[in-house]
Length: 181
Image (cartoon, rainbow, N blue to C red):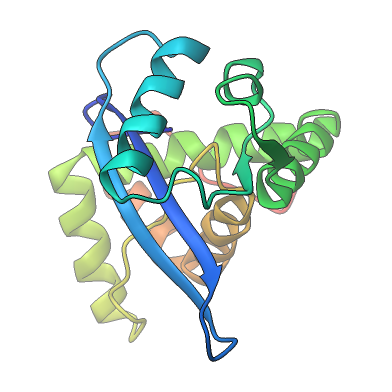
């Protein structure tokens, strides 16, 4: 399951298999708009339908999903919890339990959100980046379900700290500049 920027839910079903020449293959079987409640029954119906559409129902030996209860009981197949999802949960929990990191993330998200939502701030940043000889790069917003996006957001802010600070000083904003404190 994933949610678009417009908050529309989708179910994606992919298939990973080894072909006759022992090459690992991956295929997207479908991406389905999913306005229904995310119950185990509704999820199972869509997954079963997609597998039947591809004629692979009897060939599927294991499902890999996140660890949500509605995913774990969707079909009576062997099941594995996605390692990347579990890693994301662990990293996010560690970040949340470390007060200084939690505070930095909160400030960074607010700062990035300001530059991503304000046309004048975005344009001002691009002009200053160019004047300072820095690459004209947009700031990266953290994505809650992607632990590495936190690192990417913070790394971009560190790389662009001078242009970001200069842009903020020339804008009418109550957004504080991130400092080394």
